Length: 299
Image 1 (cartoon, rainbow, N blue to C red):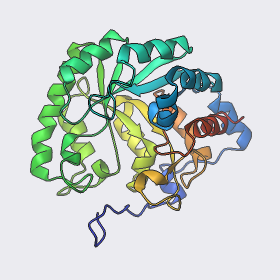
Image 2 (cartoon, one colour; image 1 turned 90 degrees about the vertical axis):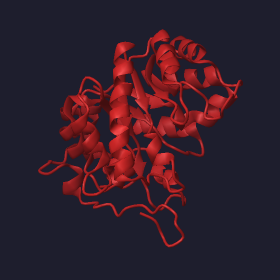
Image 3 (cartoon, rainbow, N blue to C red; image 1 turned 180 degrees about the vertical axis):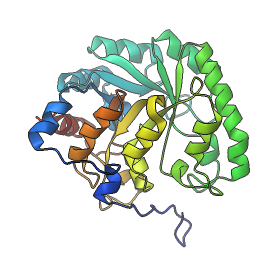
């Protein structure tokens, strides 16, 4: 969906409490919410503290662990091609463990990625889940998320084959959703086609709750539909008045429109997948991580 200037425009969120809760959910009192939150093991995605990691990777990890995060998810390669300043995957994994956290979901490259090499790297550092941030077909055009049904149909077998390679390496491949792969193409949502055409042992999912909400899809409905194929989640909120770019609208859980206080207890009944706090472009990543932990743990 684009505006007259050709820029991607956010879909109108349905925004009703009944949609968010998946129908029939009862609101919990704050004490009940806090009690249920206590059972969660929370992870942090490196995107949240990307700027801080660039300045001091090990020190940032120690600060994150001190907040109470138990897992840390990170990308295998730098966002910048041939960036020799970023630690290797082996060094990242070592620093994560030295800080007292477990290696969480590791992210694969998308453009021109050597997946065989990345699977070997992930297995070598003891990762269990590798996540594909998006499909290459969604970043091939000038408009993010725009593709054709023909391209989608051709890509799905490639994704299945990628899942087979991950499985052979002892890894679980998870596809990470955005808003655009929940928008129908010729009547079908790309994510639904991936789930229906690819066997569960070849493809799992990392559900980004906020991007589902952004597409007008109830996060709980998506979690319920995918069931045990959900192996990871990204936790962030949506505030459409914050900034101008779509990624600016991603804010700390509890500071947007999604109603996390009611959402989190229901999630705990649907899945035991680890939730990773991910705020796409915070001004202060450590402050965002700290605020998210305080809110989600009820402290």
